[in-house]
Image 1 (cartoon, rainbow over the protein chains, first blue to last red):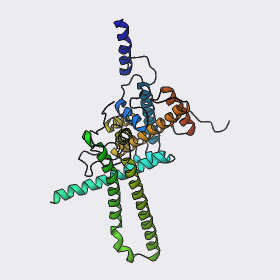
Image 2: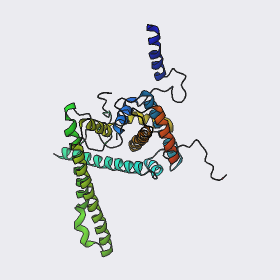
Image 3: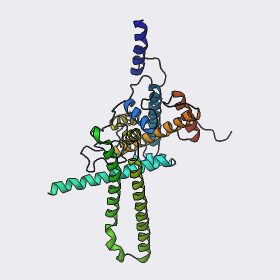
Image 4: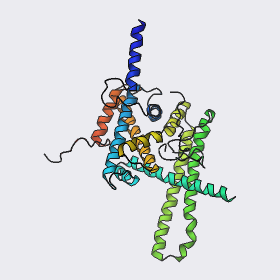
Length: 124
Length: 210
């Protein structure tokens, strides 16, 4: 019946937006759905990953960021999150450590390059 | 999923997971960034190869800037001079290793099939939106955070996702199943990573002696 078919999809939408009785972060709107899908494909999953898997990953990422933020707030300068704290927390994990170092180095390089470019433009 | 590309709204394709700034980047499509500005569709191949090549240029440029101060060598004391030569040699060797690696990457990328190219492109370009990450961190700390923190956090999160997905793929293969990944694979992957200590958890109080 048309009614029966409509109901499940309606319920699904409700759950995703946050009306369901789901535990955990069911209430919050999904922040990273699109980006996570691309990321999962990039890391080896199927081109169309399951929505439930994406949801689980989003919850994991948010929990990860929350934990890191809390830890960073408790070390170094209290109550603030600074880059040095993050680097300190990550020091044992070689992949993440190398990645953060690379990113920050490249950020500096780009800033320098951009500044030089702007100055060159300004001079001429 | 189709063409879900990530173009950073506030930064024009730079480092920092999603890795950027308001002005347009000087070096377009710098490789190894987590968010690269959207490129027109046809350019896929050439774009990626260019990005890999430009990373090499950028790095070599950086080193040449560093070696520009060579003239002052003769004024230094012998011990300091030796130290400087040591580090200079190490930097040159590192640069050569980098160049080798970049060449190898270029050869590898040029031999990708179309599906592999797609996947590689998604791998490089996907990134977390800076604004959302910033909002999330600020809602936890209550104070504002600097740009670098957002860059670092997005970067680490992407690596984290990679670790979980790779472990889940391992689990999936071990159980004799195929992608797409199902929640049970993800949960088993998280369980394994937890025992390795890759997943931070400050809720459970560890008892050292019992």
